[in-house]
Image 1 (spheres, rainbow, N blue to C red):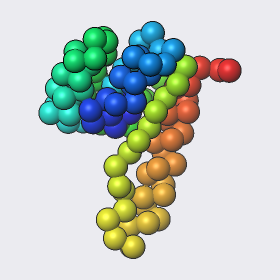
Image 2 (cartoon, rainbow, N blue to C red; image 1 turned 90 degrees about the horizontal axis):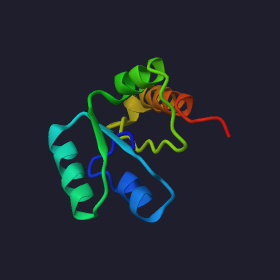
Image 3 (cartoon, one colour; image 1 turned 180 degrees about the vertical axis):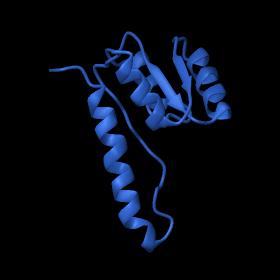
Image 4 (cartoon, rainbow, N blue to C red; image 1 turned 135 degrees about the horizontal axis):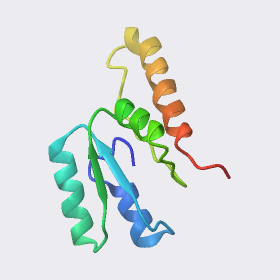
Length: 105
């Protein structure tokens, strides 16, 4: 669950889906604290990873980790019209990294 904020996607997957484990990634310590509180309230265990999403995903790939599902919900990259081209490159970059972590099949 990349750019997880409150980890809603990963907690729902653990609680109602078929996930046995989940990792939540965010750069914000406050967001990860909220994610852990939400996991506790829902009776699930959640791995939290603090850091820049791109750097974390690159590190996970180098470590050989992969996942059955990767949820990537980035924030708004374009704050004004002139930001659109750079934002599209940013979205492509994070999506390629996320896809590189998905297990085959």
